[in-house]
Image 1 (cartoon, rainbow, N blue to C red):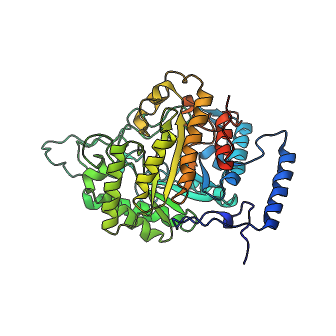
Image 2: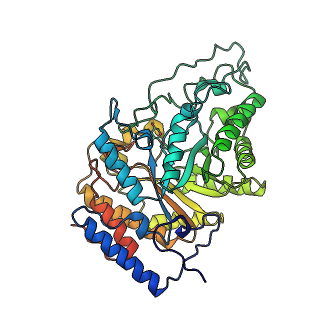
Image 3: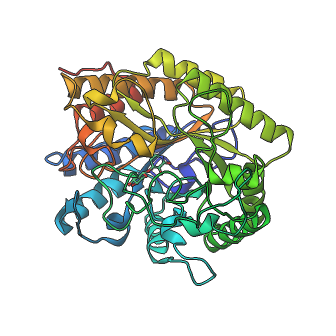
Length: 451
Ligand code: XIL
């Protein structure tokens, strides 16, 4: 029987299409080989911590991933209003990405606003997305696509048309001017990720809009073009992002997609994506699933899609959380509930906010993002962050039969969309923080030691 290679190769990765994880039994020879490689690695890297890597530590559990932005994919310095990254820093960021992780997600460049800014078949801008995919291929990484259908970072033209909205008699002309930037906090990639506009891409839903048929046609063109272009290369797609309503009793958010097409926009998006790449894993992705009411909505939605035979194949839980919650027990309960759907679970946008004003609720709402990073850090932020990450990873590990992918939303605190909340494992200089050690200790089962 062939032995599975314990050194990081594509073959050694979990099989994401199956909920059951194939844990391998290593031969003594392979273990010795690995021990030797690790020992050699440690000596070589002794002065240059960390010698151990996240992807190795968790290789029998999950893909360990990270969202990357255009600076990393294209190896380019950036000088923007709120993020300045020199080429030297970008090169260090790249070293962390390729050294620590075996999966990537695109922070912005595959969103509609950036990959398809103008109408028509020549309205695409594939350059940065191609660079992202090529980066993943050349570094042998598992490549995720994010995201096809979302209410945010979608240009107004997508929803534009001549149909008068129900109830309106004398409608004003459509407003397509982007509103003030609400899609980002410090840490934007400086290449246009901030042009999302307010809420629904600057589109005024009280004015004339596209018909259901027009919007379905635009959605189909977009999905078949983008998914088709990266067929076989992008293995997992966030097909629909954040369709659930945050409060109240409505299951779905009143987005232009929902208002113009109706609730079946979700089923249609999954059908179109499946048609464009039948082998891709198709994910529904949302935030605040730590909140029991929102989680209940998610479960209702997914069960209804499953009952209709819609090809939804994985649940993406963004997991933009805070140092105050969830605890190990709370995350354990979240995952236990999500597992009732019988689908693989992907932790898609992990970060843990340490800013004072981010402690009241866990939300990935882009319009509220800046506000969640105000007020300075909580006291003992490093220790609280380490404890919070340890609790989360204990829960992920406990549920490793269903949790298949864990993606951090950014490489380090310097480029994070929540930079002021210092939410990641590496600081702005790419140095591992106590939270990194905490996550590594959970992998090895060693007790947590954080001063
Ligand atoms: C964020 C990016 O990190 C920012 O750079 C951008 O300005 C706004 O979007 N949920 C999602 C992600 O699904 O796409 C969002 O990413 C964070 C919340």
